[in-house]
Length: 126
Length: 126
DNA sequence: CCGCATCCACCACGATACTG
DNA sequence: CAGTATCGTGGTGGATGCGG
Image 1 (spheres, each protein chain N blue to C red):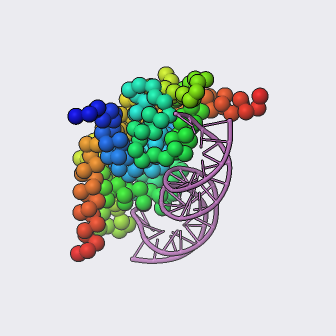
Image 2 (image 1 turned 120 degrees about the horizontal axis):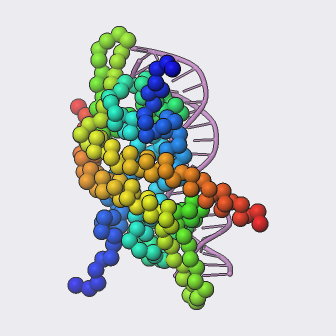
């Protein structure tokens, strides 16, 4: 019984567990896709349209990873032309609040960060 | 006044604003450093110890970027040996809740993701 | 104690073209 | 419509060693 571990409570094992999960959602598009699917299930092209800057390749990849991790379900209808719908699973929906919370923060504070960065750069010119 | 834009409300401009801010915090260590500094201001070495897997280089880089973006303040005391303390700024503190919310989610659901992934892989062996 | 410099491997991401 | 295939690139992040 020497001193306590003194690692952060929520981080637990020094953040290893947190990182294991984080590393799967901190890519460029995952949270945005989740946020977009939060409202309603969507087909591929609809998602594609709502994320103006994503490439087809990245959308495909992101969705596949989300499906693999059990956050998104994929439903293909045998029609012509083909129709595929994506929806959040139970686990996926549990990510909505965290994702939107972060998105909300981003929108509210991107200005301050921008300003701070600009002022920071300007100090190199003194 | 034709149809509405039908872009997600919170994503606003198709996620561009959100991405601008996200791209600055979705690196490997930023959120963990913020979460660690949430409890108390810390010096370099203390941070280093609490993040068992980070390299000195990455901690330095992460802290510098956080300082540049105005999320962390750096205070150097002119002593021997040198002492430098890092603390969250006002803006930095505003990120605590979103960061911990996400961390909490990560801890709670990393298991399900792991399981889903394992089961997904196993289907390739059928 | 704190941090920077250098070097380097990898992979996330994008552009493009093509298919069922 | 809903993807796949291929290739190229920048940048993130790790290892190591030096310096104030």
